[in-house]
Structure formats: structure tokens, C-alpha cells
Length: 329
Image 1 (tube, helix red, strand yellow):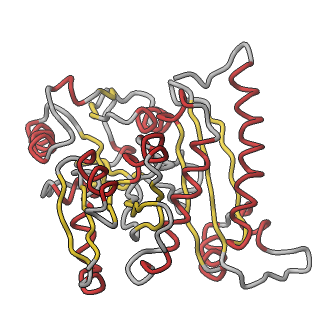
Image 2 (tube, rainbow, N blue to C red; image 1 turned 180 degrees about the horizontal axis):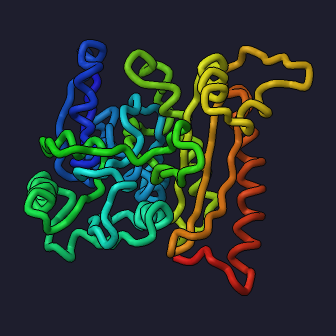
């Protein structure tokens, strides 16, 4: 019987995510780990065959994992690849000077882009630890007492902490035409499977998700091709859909960018499923944005993402070298 180590955080509760595929992994023995380093050591020693861990932490330890000859071979289905604003009111109805707690530099800038007169602060200004359930419940109590107006956390953390306050999704909403969007932080809600090199990843297909694995590949590529000093400031949206669903949504909101990309001059369209990628950077005050978008058949994803990154690097080079460059950490 194979053995899999499971490492969770409140923002990416890996063990909870396994519950939906529990019936399909009966032949795998699970072991919870409190330390990611311990999980890597067990995998290296052969005591584990697989490790399940949050993709953002795996990315942060990419150099170490490469030296240990580990590979990411699969990913779990994503449920909510976005953050949420816990607040009685949505951003559009916030009072001027309303206080939001947020530790994500990108989302702080996105909030300022949406509403200029909101006071965005870090959790530590209120002596709150946002990586614990107790800390998030304390933040919710501050909303109820009127000391703050809201705070930002992962959707998974909202559930894991047992919060019950009103929440508002911060995502790329196609229905919100003309309203500044929230492009997710990299690897949001993404949990991946790591193995020693040579493991047959295709044997995990019964309980893993190809869409999520493509999201890992795309986001990993974008981060590799983006200067390290900008990693906390880049937003990445990735999804894939059947062509019918994409056209229906685009026609409903009159998205000419998508319609022009999918329908040829004769009015025809093929039936290949499509990917959609958005990469975005904002200035510190949120008033200026640079971004790049691509839509194409999934069969061309590995090639298209490299050409997209060539264009992205050209954009970054221009904005980072101009005298009035606004892309600054």
C-alpha cells in the first residue's frame, strides 16, 4: 500500500480537500504532517510515496525540491481560487476611510484601485495573526464591534476557521463590466501532489484534476519568467472551459475580446476547449495597471504560454526601465 503525507495550512486545508475523493484513495495510507520539512525528509527516505501540500509553499521551496529530485505530478480540483472580503458591505458601499485588514500586497493595490479612500492596513496593526483560526475569529469580532469594516482572507480559511460573517468574493467577475477586477494571487486554492522523480503520475488520475494541474504549470511558468521582486505583486487568473460555455458567457456580457478571439471572420468556431490566462501588475496606489491576456485551445497551451511570456517580459522591461516606471515593489 502506498503512503501519502498530507500537509495543511488554514489557507489551504489539504486534508479537508481530500474528503471529497476519500472513496477513490482507499488504497493509499494517509499521514498528517505538522512540518513540511519532515514530509520532505520522509519522501526522500522512501517512507512516503507522495506528499500533498499547498502549491504556494511548494513554489517557495522549488530550489530545495529540485535538489532532492522531487516533481509535482498532479493537483487537486480547485474549489474557490480567490480571496474573500469578510464585511457587512461590499466595497462599493464602504464608507470613506473604512478600514480593511489585508496582508496580500497585490490585493491591497487592487482594493485601492477599486476604492481610493479606503484605509488598508496589515493584520499586525491590530495584533492579529491571520494564519490561525483564532486570529480570523478575532478579526470578525472587530467587525462586529465596529473597530474595522472588514478583512481579506482565503475562501478556504473562511470555512476552516468556522466564520459566519458576510463574505464577498474578490475575483475576476465577467458580469462586472467596467469595474476594476480582482485577479487572484498566484497558486490561490491550489494543492499539489509531489513525488520522487520517475513516479507514474498518470496513475493518480482517478482522484486528481487535469485542469488544476494545468493551472500549476501555467502559474509556475509565469512566476519563473517574472522578476522575483515582483512576485508578491503579480496576479494570475487561469481557467479552462468548453467552447459553448465560454461563448454563452461572452455573449451575455458582450465581451468583444473573447468573441473576436473565438469566432473567425466567416462566423465559424471549432469545438476545442479553451484556456484563459490573465496576468496583471498594479502600481502602489492602484491607479495604473499593466496586464496581458490570452485565450486559445488547450492543445496549444504549452506553446502559447511561452510566447505569452515573451510578450510579458517585453512589457515588463519597458515599464521597469522607463524613467517614470510605476512597477515597483
